Amino acid sequence: GGTIGIIADADSNLFASLPDTTWEMISSYAAPPDVYNLSLSSNHFFREVSTDKPSAKKTPSANAAAKGNAASPLDDEKVLATQLLRASLLSSLGRVLEKSGSGITLDAVLKMGELPEGSALIAGSTIVAVCLGKDWSGGRNSSDVDVYCSARAAP
Figure 1 (spheres, helix red, strand yellow):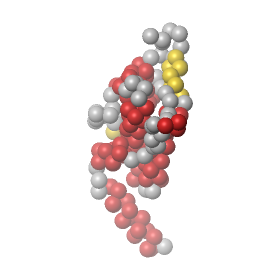
Figure 2 (cartoon, helix red, strand yellow):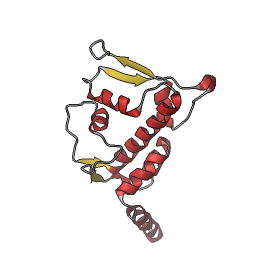
Figure 3 (cartoon, helix red, strand yellow):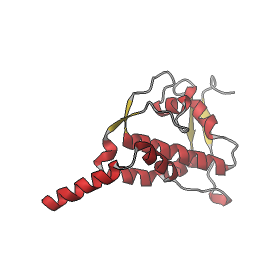
């Protein structure tokens, strides 16, 4: 029993030795499944942390998109694992959109979060590629971007 406790303490200290902003940066370069697995590896990632620090990846429209409602204010506290997975998913979405050749940018997608709830969504293989951290660009296996919106939200 004692050895397991010592190992668990060492793991906690290892994860705690890096600031949360460093974990977020690491997560933005990692595939979402890898960030998910990392989060499961320690209780350190399941503590609430403040979200009041704006970063390059956290725009008001990105926060609204994540909440699913543009009018909702952000909670001041979020679980670190949630923040890390969000950073990874947004980074992955940016990479997939860039390689898709669709001309749709991450900023344009994040602005859809400002639309009324339920008025627009992205579907298709692009979102699957984002979640899996895969690149299906080029050839017959390339991903497509399907954007569905209500008539009111249409340009």
